[in-house]
Amino acid sequence: MTALQLAIRHKSFARADGELNAIENIEIEIAENEFVAVLGPSGCGKTTMLQIAAGLDNDYAGSARYADGLKDRMAYVFQSPTLLPWRTVRQNIELVFSNPQAHADDIASVLEAVGLAGSEDIYPLQLSMGMQRRASLARAFVLRPQLLLMDEPFVSLDEPLAARLRDLLQTMLAGNPASVLFVTHDWREALSLADRLIFLSPGPARITGELAVSLSRRQRSNPAELQSFRDANEHLFQSG
Ligand SMILES: Nc1ncnc2c1ncn2[C@@H]1O[C@H](COP(=O)(O)OP(=O)(O)OP(=O)(O)O)[C@@H](O)[C@H]1O
Ligand SMILES: [Mg+2]
Image (cartoon, rainbow, N blue to C red):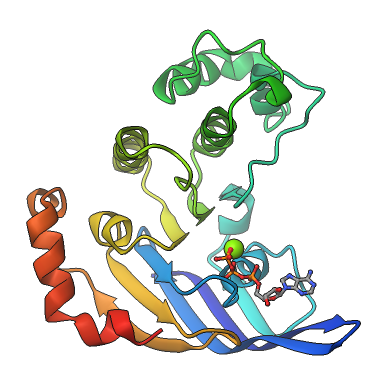
């Protein structure tokens, strides 16, 4: 079954120096519980595409269709962590629930999982960027989303921590399957996580290729396997 059907015929921004064409004809269908990673150069339109997929930007030609009820079970991890500076870490996460007391155990366990146990009562401006990212991830995971939009969620983290959080994402998805649209610059990350890759051109973004990732869980954790899978499909990785 299709979870999300995104058809962006045209998206532009009006700017003082004229109109900027950001996206030209992107069609993406994500099946239920499929993990799709989008790779493309900086500034090509990836965040713009996610904002449209999230329903935050309606000023475009095209459509975004969701399976029944899916949009109400959506979580979005923004490219920059967006925490309210006047709320503590715990309060920022409580905000996603109308009745946070009923979710106190879930909140405590997700904070533990992202390594923020002990930092619950700290305000975001007192956190490092990596800690703010982890708090944003906790806020997305605690919702048990069925549609997860992620915009370079592990960027600027050191590699061991990024690897731990990728594992956490996979564990979360194993317990709580979701359809995922995941933007990254990191081809290794994309191959280690996704069922399918979509490659975008420099802006205005259009799709230059797609690739099903036919790697086992074991192969995905082996850098040499990732490299040889890339080598076998190098033309796609070069296409952006
Ligand atoms: N609100 C806006 N107003 C005007 N132009 C915008 C706006 N948002 C994005 N753009 C422009 O649209 C293009 C695509 O931007 P977008 O943020 O989607 O790129 P991106 O692929 O996410 O880049 P990065 O990998 O660096 O995050 C860029 O040229 C950007 O300057
Ligand atoms: Mg972006």
